[in-house]
Length: 360
Image 1 (cartoon, one colour):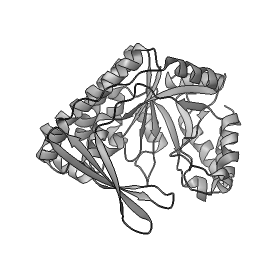
Image 2 (image 1 turned 120 degrees about the vertical axis):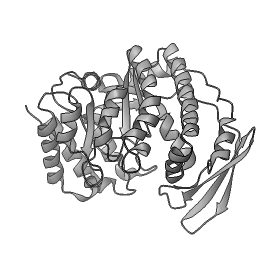
Image 3 (image 1 turned 90 degrees about the vertical axis):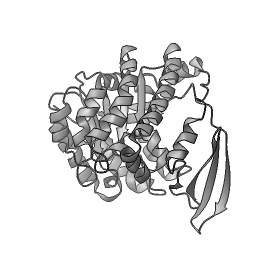
Image 4 (image 1 turned 135 degrees about the horizontal axis):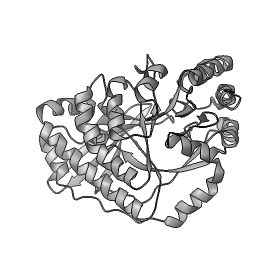
């Protein structure tokens, strides 16, 4: 079984000769300390190439930069709508570290109405040749995935910010639904363009984690995630496609929602303390219906010994791969610590080797 076939069988819930093994590729930019790791992963793991097309036209906006501190500068964006301007800001690191959202477009119901006055974005063209080239390039090493962006509900959280959104689900629930409905239509329209050009069959989405416990319970997850993603995923399945979802956090109570939506592969299934779902619990709930992608915590790749990583990987396989299906061993996030690639390499190698050397 080659690497492409192994991933295909993971997405379609068929038996595999061993678990797949994958590492997300959001490496620190311009960091040669990760070169050896990248080479090893390219040679020995199941690969996913990411291809984008039918992009949405940007909304009319202007951004200015303001001083903030020794470590950050503030980027202020003004979004022009037919009913008036909206403003958001983000703190951008001056030292190559992750940024931080500062303020958000929607601060109250009036801002939500302004956002709803925006026309739907135009959908760009599809370069089928580049997609076919990506498929040919990865060959038997893996698959090509197509991002659908942030989930409709998750993208609306991004307009409000976490706490303002949570309050709006109580005080202006109908308005939140109107925003989610609008965003679902945009995603569906873009998906139709992709399907018309025979792009697929592997699609991915993220952002569901913004509407999960402990801030939101199963009711909100059903109302603002399942309600607006199930039609999208149904359309993908009707076209013979598959859906991968990336969702951090405490997901045990909302796993039935992921099943209802028809998610094919779910990442990363975090055990306590980062989440609330052990591999055994997750397998008991979703076994045979969702492929588990996970769940070695990313901090372990910088803190644990290679021997501990190998042991954790072997225990994961023993716990959830007893039926020889539905497991892609994967850290919970991309390698992210700048300058630490050489130190991390033995841990990542230990995880990969434990999978490659596994015997039933």
